[in-house]
Length: 235
Image 1 (cartoon, rainbow, N blue to C red):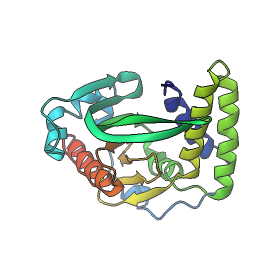
Image 2: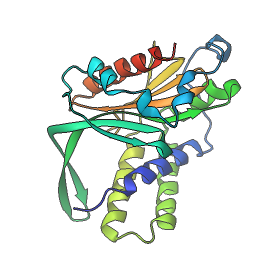
Image 3: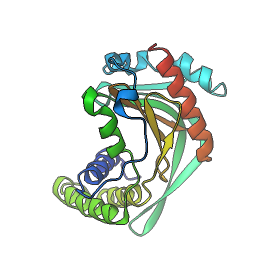
Image 4: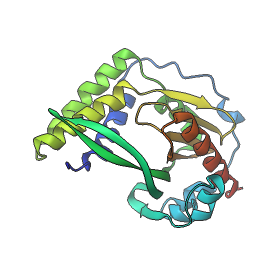
């Protein structure tokens, strides 16, 4: 089975390309910056120890169907803590001229904890987590392919093709929906590979990734519940 190692950086390139497209932006209506609670968020203090913020007990509380024993993976460089357990779901990926069926484990994670400039936190969040226009998607796709040609030159062709296909899907299906009542503001990544809630708490961004169901709405509801519990530990 081809390695999926390129997935992380190819999705990062897609995001960066989208943010740097240079097209006029009309952010969704949100509270004005001065309406957001002032002061730093304590979420940032856990950037290097995310598993102290998202604990197994918190996951079980939000999702009682989770087993008592969870696989834990903490990646400090990504500010990520993930809990996973087996599921009966699979995903079929097309690689070149053939298809690969891969297992889809159940997963709940926190990641990308990032402190921002308080004065620009809301504005930057709105610019980043928004749906792209057709023109911006085309520009992002061109930028992603250029990055892949530059940094993926040493990859086997199958991996390059897989990374390109996934990057294309990430861009073409990119869609964010505003979520009320979570942190200072929040947005649900409703793309086909999304299942991620982006949250801004005062001056700090973080993501809650959930994949426990084939139904996006179930993942969305659980992500909101997890995010609220994480935020509650910082009050």
